[in-house]
Length: 319
Image (cartoon, rainbow, N blue to C red; front, side, top):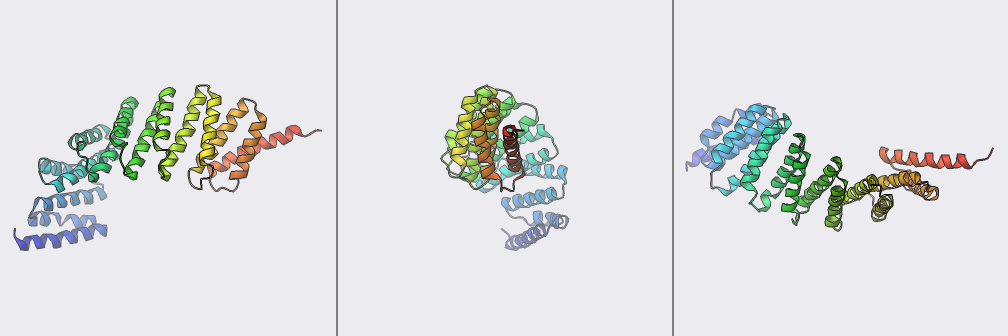
């Protein structure tokens, strides 16, 4: 290795990164020819081309970005350097994101399929997140192509492959995928499968102490109750709303919104069933618990409860 050239590369590369940090993207690109000329190793070339793609992305030069990622993939797809192979996954992934930005869903899907075919057997922690994100984005992409049932299959594959991860950041994505499966079943009016999918979210994640995951558990219970109501199983729906309220009413975070929704939806069913005593009790609880909130959606729920209580006063007044 020519030590002078290597030192020169490092100086140039540091300058390149400095310009990127300063958002001097066009100026940074002027260094690419010199960087490639002074590159001494495959990793030097790889980092240079990935940096070029990053600068071009910031400049919204989508066509050139895709061309650069194509060059990277073609150059390094058969290399044995483990460090490059790991980061090469991001070339496929980032290329897919360019197609997503331009709503070219068919080419986006091709990129995800290529990435998964090449890397799904890799069980290393370094690639776990990019693989999970690839599945999530692929499912969204398939859904954009109007194929909800295939989108469900992609989410299911994600869940199957990563549901036993010990990484909570990964489990957050698995919970999201499982929740989306249930939601999609609901969209295609398959309430039975939707309920089963929501039950999976609850049973799998109810004991994981993570706010994001617990929000999916709460949402799953609320939505499950909604599907039960659609099936005219009002009694079971009410019990499910009660489960949300009991589990999460002491929460002090975003999960509390699901408690408000559960109480509101419970009040709707009670009103339809003409169970006025229980209805007014629920309204009292909503007003007492949420009147001081700053959340506009919850304030609307409080207003609805107050209207019902005002009607009660009106109806009991004599003339």
